Length: 88
Image (cartoon, rainbow, N blue to C red; front, side, top):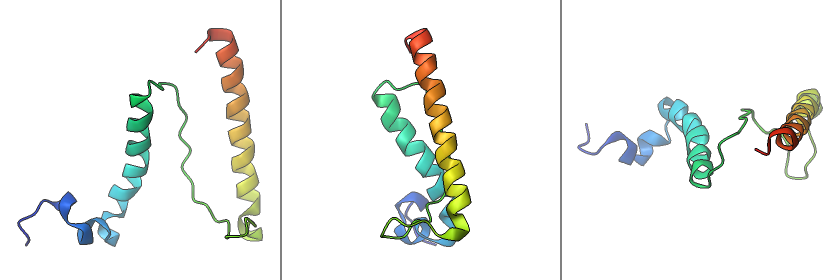
């Protein structure tokens, strides 16, 4: 066993066993950046992009892609109304 700390071991961090840590970091890092900018009200939606380099959505995922876009639109509209009502 190496004498280094686990988070300093890039082979471990990039391993399949550490996938949950990498996923969690995709939440924690943006949160810390937003907090440093005094952004306090957020909605986090986890998903996975399945769009090829041309920007075309696979037919297999098209339904879910559109549902995610619709959800994002609905959340944005609600947030705009909330902001107008509260100033936040």
